[in-house]
Image (cartoon, rainbow, N blue to C red; front, side):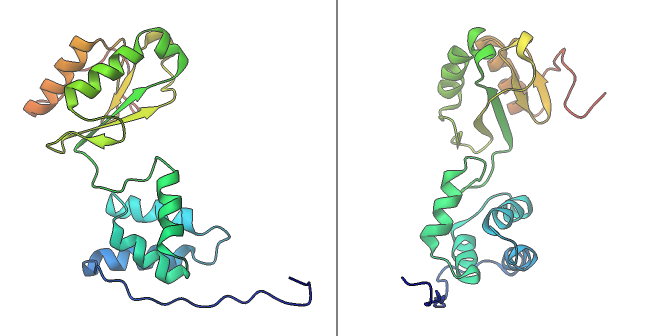
Length: 188
């Protein structure tokens, strides 16, 4: 293409087939309007949609694509590239299991395998009942006391398979998990 020819965007307006409930549609459109003029607006829009709705559902992907004049494939590509974004509702309890080298040296790989078996779900997925989600995290800043977990803003140190099972049992019973010797994140 020569420098004298200017690229012209051709608008693509395809109505979405899957409708969002009015409150969710309003949240997505509000996020788009708030960020659309930014360079690289898609990431801030996806962050805000997930922050307000808890996840980015397919109908929201279609609406974002429509509003930004992108294809659904382009929006989906960004959504799936970043593990932070959820494409299904979040679990009641998200378990962040440290996968950093210090925790690995203290048994995190074995704990990860146990957690996947116990929950019946691999990383980035939820247990069948939707109560527990398992996510990797690459350092919780608790390196000397690994392997470490973060569940519901509570940090757990030196977690064994047996302790993991006890924590899950307490959370399943609705009585809360046994408190860690580590301070809960955000508490003093």
